Length: 59
Image (cartoon, rainbow, N blue to C red; front, side, top):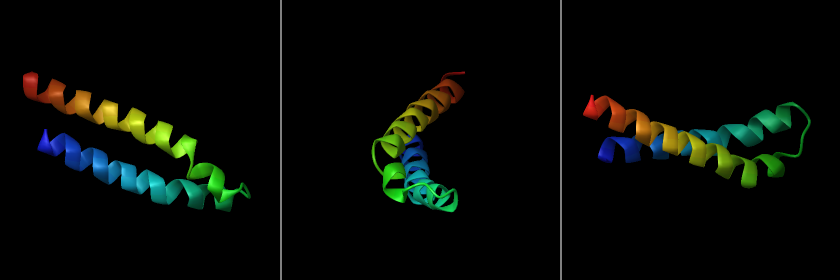
């Protein structure tokens, strides 16, 4: 559980920092990337990480 939490937190931080930068580079308002879109991406990645680690542990 600790490994899943560490990985999910790290990925969420990276997404939260990178998404507005990517949007700014393409000329899109960076505030759009730091709102609901970032939250959805972070939630999906967190679930995938948790299930991937659980699957690796359980075999």
